[in-house]
Amino acid sequence: MHNISLNDNGFTFKDLEQKIYKLACDEACNSLKEILELLDEKLLNERDTKIYRNKGRKKTCLRTIMGNVEYSRRIYEFDLDNGKKATKFLLDEYLGMDTIGNVSINLVETILTNVSEMSFRKTSENIQKLCNQNISPQGVWNIVQTVGSKIKDLENRKIELNNSGNLKGDTEVPVLFQEQDGIWLSIQGKDKPKGKNNKKELKLAVSYSGWTLRPGSKEEYQVIDKTVCASFDGTKYFKNLTEATIAEKYNVDEIETRILNGDGAKWIKVTCEEQDIHFQLDPFHISQAIIRNVSDKKSKKRLLKLFREGKVDEGLQIIVELMIANANNEVASKKLSGLYNYLVNNRDGLVPYKLRDNIKLPTPPEGIEYRQLGTMEHNICDILAQRMKGRKMSWSINGADNLAKILAEKFSNRLFDTIDKIYRNIIPNSIVDTVVAKMPLTASQATKPIKKSKVYKCASASIPYSNSASTLGRKIIKDLCGLKSFSDIGYN
Image 1 (cartoon, one colour):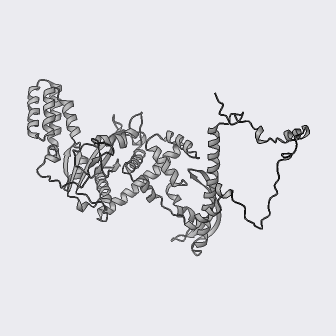
Image 2 (image 1 turned 135 degrees about the vertical axis):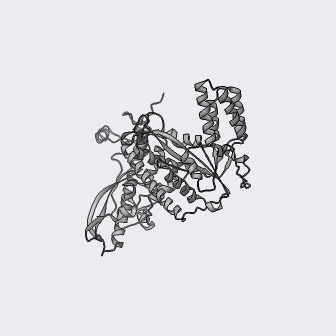
Image 3 (image 1 turned 120 degrees about the vertical axis):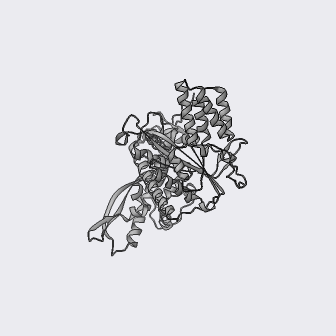
């Protein structure tokens, strides 16, 4: 066995790698500090001196993936409209530090990528391992709440624009498929509902333009242009949010057919009101209701087939016959009555959309197929349940709502774009180039001959007695000085 220690004190390659990484991060932090202070100087020179009066410097700390960057920036005093005085940091305003606090955009993105899949505590541990940064679980939670609330502000703005007719997306599709469902989460603290049930429904809406084969597969399909939104808010707000989310991406005027798939809940069917949207009762929920409430296997099989084929009247007639046959069985009769009422209340959505005479689908674009709806349970699981349900988790309303909005942005493939909208700032090339010019030489540059200059040269000399005969006295002097030749250095 080989001892992989770099010295007798047990300094391993892992330790060496971490030490070099730390040194590189510290150097990067110094460069960023210089950039920020140069930018602060630029703002000082370009400010309106009649409005902003320089009141000196104050230190602050920016948290980045490279570590904490401590720097100084100037504070300015200015007059308000009411005659009172106020202060601000022009650099903080320029960089958008008031948006997500003194946390860099890269660190925010790294945190949100982790927190969308694991707990706040585990995210904190991962950040400490992956970045030269320490952040507590509470710090992770704070960032999630800040970003989630900012996303909600953007959603409110989208709703306003859509209600005024000023929101129109660029994507044009002939058919748009929509699916909606909810997930019940345990609520804690002051938000906990009164009574025995301590849960509240988090609503989720998904829209897409069709299906395409999954890359590398001949049988598996995936939806195209998935767009997601989620909220705890009421029915009217969620309807407006869904429409605004769709209008932001699609040119709604060009959509010929819209189909909504859901479990029949009132807040889902409200989406179809005052709009030309065809409602379809989710095939999974139809099958689930039949399987749970019909005990006879032959009748169960026959009902599943009839409703798949859109033969609603025949299916309902069989349920009525089963109700009559089980009139003396209180439990069976109650189940069958519940099944009948559920199907009758959603009768307008029982026939699959492909079998309806009033729906004429246009030819799908090349590479796209129109298949049977029913992806919502899968989406509920992937988008919300895996992260937010189980493991004895409970939430506050705002806490769950903010995380759900981040998850919705992630599964819509727009999380980083949304963060850029929240946290947009551009550092001038002139500032970056100034710092880059002062960066240390690269390895290739370091080997080039030094050009002549008027700068005083540092004296250099070889190791004492390195080129002389090795006498006993000289060996003693070298040992006293701690000097060793390269051949004497052991590597274990």
